Length: 299
Length: 334
Image (cartoon, rainbow over all chains, first blue to last red; front, top):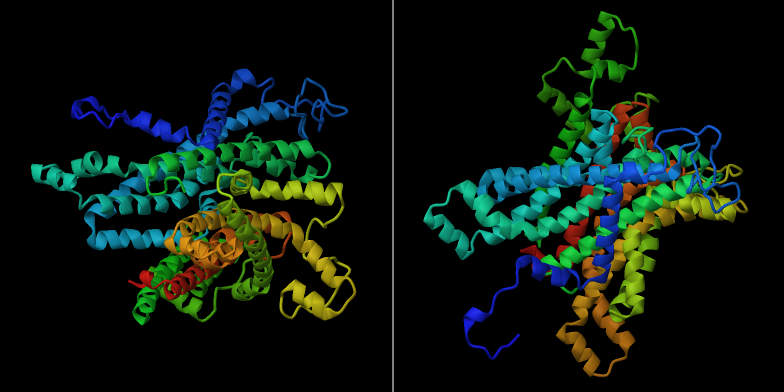
């Protein structure tokens, strides 16, 4: 910060990542979120080694056993067992995998297709643009969970179909964001100069313009990661997502609904896992927004 | 203004047509033969099949089928439910008041708590009340509401025994449901305890359905207030020596509320999605539960009708919010 120096050479712009990190790390919540997220990733990756039991093995002699600190609980099953004697802790640990798998797949499908369609809409203008945007309006007219529900009814209930449905429901947001960002970038000088130099349309789209539109898209990706986890769990809970005995957290909750007044642990822990996971990602999302989106900075 | 209204309504019509096409295609995209699905009969003879095909109009070209579907909708004809053989339109509007009552209570709950929370957070920006409120709001925003419902049931119904677990009113009461709004009907019935029972049944579903809108409204109010508080006219008001209450409450809040009203209007979609989960858990006899049951019992005409009606309701509310917004804020009309 030595403003007195006149030689321009000495200022080296901090690396993009470093600049991002300095903003991001100012937000304490975002750091906490990131730490929790990393822990979840580690649990998901090494579930086989961490989990004390198998996720599907039924211990018939220990049905609905409470957690170890309650009367009747044992340290063999730290968080107790469910109605058919499966270890809760192990199922939760394996469930982390599904959560991340769902988040990743949905974000990749919805962001990938949404950004592409948004680029096409922004670059082509005219009737193509109008058609695309009207289609997106139509998709957005339906409440997301309802549309996902109906799509699953068409495709059949399974985790894969639930992910496809959620991805389709989330995709219009990317289209709108990308298109808006493209329209903002297009009249700028650097785009014009690239065009004058003779860059092809594809190069203009993906190499020249897209990198400058990424900030809102990344923030949206974080948001839709958590939405995907929540919606997939909701579909699982309604019996339209992952099917039992998959240890997906929403499906686990659906299995345990009838024990809600008898065995609090089978209900409490899967939901807590969803909440902590989603909360961590949303905390990170807030930090990302603060760091990446200058318009919303420090609000 | 008229120009603005016409333009906004102009975008409504193509979206409505698109939505009707999606709900029209829904039954035709289902796996399996739509005629067998719709008839719900097994071991059907060829003659009967041909007869049904004519009856449902499946022998017509797709465009003709769509046209008769569209004209049907506009006359309030959504077909007959597979399950109950009653008109879907009637079923929808019999159940809709239950969802509307719950949604209104939820939004009132969200506004009454959310706006003050947002104001306090903005005024105490960066201090502990701000941090506590915004952390709570983020937790609410991240909440899987179906789990939240179960937790509340465990605590308030299971442990404390304060609230009932399901339904709209205790089975002890019986009175005509003219309006469909249990609070009004039970009050008008004049039966001792009926109104109290209706209120008791509403508490948990209201909290559950209102949680996410509450979090969104609190966050939105805070950021809108922060923006307004840095404006010149607020500084002028402070400089004139007005009390903090007058500055924050009258000068700032009035302008901060504009985006908040939009958020409230736009949460109709969230409420409808939330109603699906909330009503299923609390056995609340509304549209959300009806849709889920429709899917699980393969009552596809009901699902088709519900899908269309919910989308239309969301679209109409969004249209009204936009018009209201244009009315309040002339800059939008451009």
